[in-house]
Length: 259
Image (cartoon, rainbow, N blue to C red; front, side, top):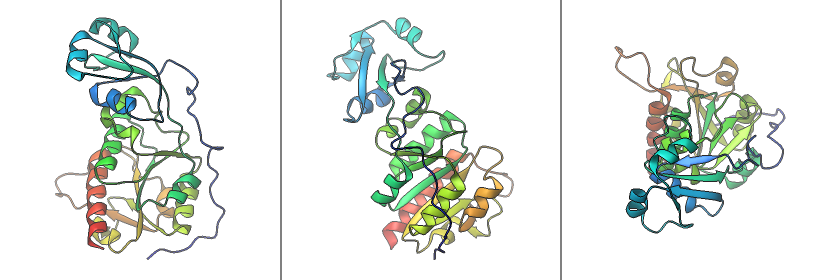
């Protein structure tokens, strides 16, 4: 079902890429689920945990034990409008994987995000990926959000469990995935097949999602082995990218159980 490409493999960021702020201590996560998941992740380096008295009572034995702090003082540590639920943790960002690491692990389902720029959507996609067994999210090194506290809060802890991979060129990465045996399916309203037809029988699957509004870039769409649509009511023009991702991941997970 897949075709082979003979072009050069993509250039990933050297080694295990660190984010631009990786050596800074000014990286905060907030919210009950995001902080608890970070503290439970052995790969996380945690510099500081703060919590309100009410949050300390509610959350119980966090380790390391949080510094007691009033909610209004936590507000001052975080971006304006952060809904922290009385708890926040200052952490070193996780290192992103190189594409070679993802291919070596050979997960059954991978998601590739082509310039999805909204951090709330990115967090929601991480959450759906964790729910439906997606083995990694592949993003571009540029034109994609950093893994901020907003992403982590929206992901409800899933950024700790779903590996993130950053690549320089999405199109070349899709060619490398096809070379490795992945059927690369781009979600596009003009795709001839529906999502169920497109993923049927695929041993390994890469689902490609485009940016909010413009969708897949032409070069990325051309690099997909197949384009597919999600059937929706004709009175509705399109789906939010995070909703489309959740549907596609659900269908992919169901297809895996049927093989």
